[in-house]
Length: 506
Ligand code: HEM
Image 1 (tube, rainbow, N blue to C red):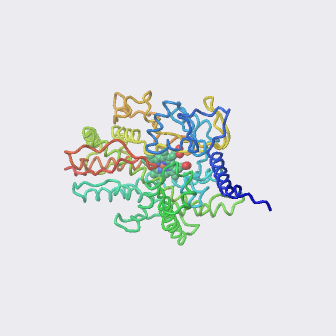
Image 2 (cartoon, protein in one colour):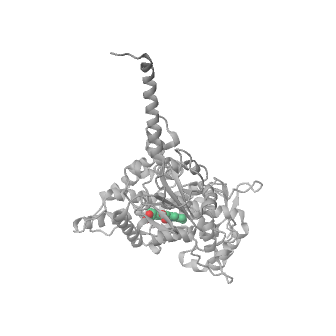
Image 3 (tube, rainbow, N blue to C red):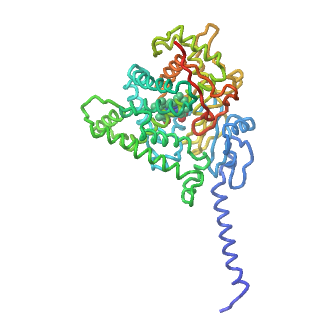
């Protein structure tokens, strides 16, 4: 046979080169957007080869979105490793899509934790279509039955609030990190509704599970990592902490949510009056299973639901309390004004209750302004189930949409000096509370926070009692006060700071 030494030498190189070319072509074809010629929203910056706009998702995304919006307008496109991501800003534009096009923007994209737990269509945060509709309706109806926004819920909150205030008193003015206590208190309210139990603040099991619940938010890898997380997971080591994150959420799932459900199941009798969320859900599930219509209610959905109540219902409320305290450290005069209002309208002999709230408009304005300026949950995502048009742009089927709620709260055309903490913007000239539609801390459209009424009640009661009983003072009055600039870890958290709760002499 003919032997060519040159060919023999070249072949390994040719093979390697060919393989590399194929790999490059594969990577290029996977990361390229295929919408040439269609009128998708504009890009704020040129795409980088292979990476698209992925690097723009690093750092403080909310700050990055500000300059992108200035360049490209309220709706702009990003290429994240081949996935079209359309970012939507401004109250009117978000409303137009989430309300007018609600049916085609109903589903959320699969999130990382659901993917890791094999829960791609479960519960409320990651379920889709008819399953989501049934889970949403049952959650809403059970929470309403348990008195969300009514007295039963208020009683549960008041019981926990008493423990919380006692705990704050016990520090006798020593500087503390508020969320390490407030998260335990707020989560206890969710627990007492979900499975009828509260935990002692020093309970090791509870503290461990709360750490997992916090990790859900704090340890969540950066958003862009999600697109390549399954690949990174296969690599040795733990790049971006993906494996640690997975371990935390699995522990929370198995040893908290499933464990508590099994405990309720042991004593469940379908004929008894349900005493908690889990029992009510299981009883309704058994009823529907016997019907002819079929049901999406099942235990896998319940596990995910319980987890979303714990995770979505804890840090959001706890961080809002923390932000409010931080703003008041900067504005002691506002703090005193709230105290004076409570002293006049409620007195100091008993804790404030829900029926006092109509007489406390200034406190309500402080809470609204806290929610506006902090925008705890600034980003939410959806997938377009069909193509549709908005403001002349095509939103193609399967594109992902990210809604930037933060912009609704910071638009200068709506809010004068939006970066300042000014509760007066929620009051009219006679001191009456104003309703302002652009305030959307709980979101808009069909996915609007299912725990809104409960959260409002918690914020009202907790803050009213905190203002009544304590003066909030900085850890070290000689030092610079903690900054207004927060960190986005799914929820926006202030940079950790300590505060002194000085008991007022009442
Ligand atoms: C101050 C406290 C809270 C804030 C600022 C807040 C904010 C939000 C926001 C912005 C959303 C997303 C809306 C969207 O995707 O458009 C949401 C959804 C949700 N929240 Fe809240 N939330 C709070 C408290 C609570 C509480 C106390 C619970 C329950 C115990 C809760 C449970 C949920 C659930 C389950 C969802 C998903 C709803 C769905 O997709 O249908 N949240 N919340």
